[in-house]
Amino acid sequence: MIAEVYPNIFKNEIVLPRNPLKAINSYIITSENRNLIIDTGFNTATCQAQLMSGLEELTIALNKTDLFITHMHTDHSGLAPILKKHGVQAIYFSQLDGDLFNNISRKGNFVQTIQTHNKIYNLTSNNPFGKDFGDVQIEPLEFIPLSEGNEIVIGDYCFEVVDIPGHSPGHIGLYERKHRLFFCGDHILDEITPNISFWGFGQDILATYLNSLQKVYEYEINYLFTGHRKVLREHRKRIIELFDHHEKRLKEVLTILKDSAKTVGEVAPHMHWDIGNLRWDDFPNSQKWFASGEALSHLEHLFHTGLVGRSDRNGMFFYGII
Ligand SMILES: [Zn+2]
Ligand SMILES: [Zn+2]
Image (tube, rainbow, N blue to C red; front, top):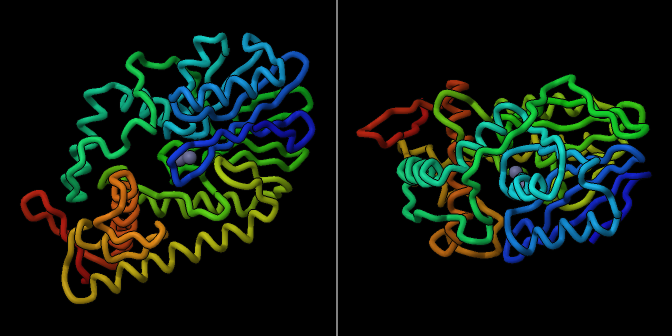
C-alpha cells in the first residue's frame, strides 16, 4: 500500500506475514532527475511483490534511482541485491552495516553466528528465524559507504546522513534540515521499542543507543519517518518514553540478580516481554533469540557501568551484583 506522506515522499507499507512487526515502511522520494528508495523489506516473494508494485505505481525509472539502507537487518536490506538486478544505481549503507550485511550473508558465517550466540544465550535452535526472514545472499553486495555529514540531494530536498548507532552498530539516518524531516529506520519506533541486541563483549551497545537517542532529541523534527508503524510527530515525547523503558529494564534486571549471579539464559525468561500471554517456553524461537539479545545488552550495560560483575566459568558468563 503506497501513500504520499509529504510532497514527493511516499510510504510503501510492506506487510510482513506472521511477523510481530506486522509491516515495514519503505520510503520513495521522487524528483524529475533522481529518486531515492529507503529500505526494502525481506528477500521473500511477498515483500518483493509489494515493493515492486509500489515502484510501478509511481512509474519511476530504476536506472535513475538509488537505494539508501538505514541498517543491516534483513527486513530493511534483504531486497537490495534484487533491486540492483532490476537496475537500481547506487546502494548506500554505512561501512559497518554494509560489511555486516555482506559477512552475515555468507551462509557459513550466518550459521556460525547463530551457534556462537546460541551458546551464550543457552538456546538450541539452529535456525531461529525460519523462512519468513527471507533468503540469505551469497554474492557480496557492492555499496557506497556513507557516514555523518554526507549529503544526498533529491529535487528540493537535501538529506544529511546522521550516525545513529545502537539498534545496529552502523545504523544511519537522513535529516532534511529545511523541512525538518528525519528518516530514522528502527532507531525510534512508535508502539514498539526498538530491539537492542548483543554485538560482542567489547562494547556497551545500550550506552551507544542511549547516546544516539539523546543526539536525535536535540534535532528539530516535524516528521519522523520510522521503519515500522506510524510516522511520528512528537519525537521528544517518544524518546523520553524510550529512556524510561530502558531505565525500568535495567532495574528489572538488577532485581532478578538480587539473590545470586546468573547467566543471560537464566535472566531472560524472568523479564517481562510483551508477546501475547505466552510463557517463555512457548515463545517462537526468533522471539527467544531477540529477547536473549535484549537481556544481554542490558546485562552488559550494567557490567560496563560497574553495577554488576561478570565472570567467565568455562565459557558461561555469569552476572552478579558487586
Ligand atoms: Zn532493525
Ligand atoms: Zn526493522
